[in-house]
Length: 237
Image 1 (cartoon, rainbow, N blue to C red):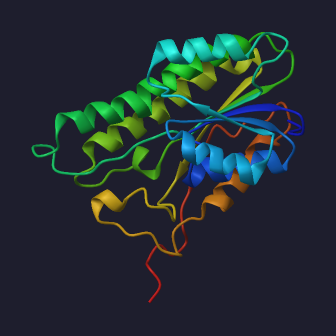
Image 2: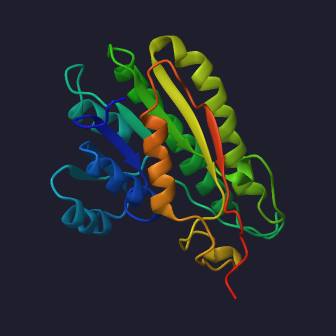
């Protein structure tokens, strides 16, 4: 795919990895619709990235709101070439102590939200002649697990299964599907579980650069899954 002038949707775009991915796509000449719940953070990001970044305040787990936005924004003449399902929440704790609301929130955002937007975007992608690409941001905790992470691991294993089934379903429609599984990223994502970020964690800009490489592969080449880890995950002395 030649990224310049393509249209991309990035969920969870207001901070962290989503902001880095948006930045990388805009720098390559794409128009990015950045989705998130935090409108103030989206507006701040737009100031940095310019008019090719279009902020959209949206909760992707609300299917009616997603469907309405898709219908009002896109058509067969103007439709997404790239969907990056990055939005995700994570809470960690003992299964018998975690409030049920945290479990449902992770399921609704990480799985149901991904389904809501993907199912609508695929309808538009199928009508395109050129290759399109869906990248689902999973996690290393979608191929392994950790104690007190049952809820989060469940959602990330789900993303891996969703991605595997979806690529097999959509490959003949010229729609690529990739699941990207990073290890811990140098953001505040895992702060709730007592893990502080540090410089030996993966850097969001480097993962964004890897995502660009995946998008730039030849039309008949698919990287269906990729795991990215820090070589040395220990915090600097």
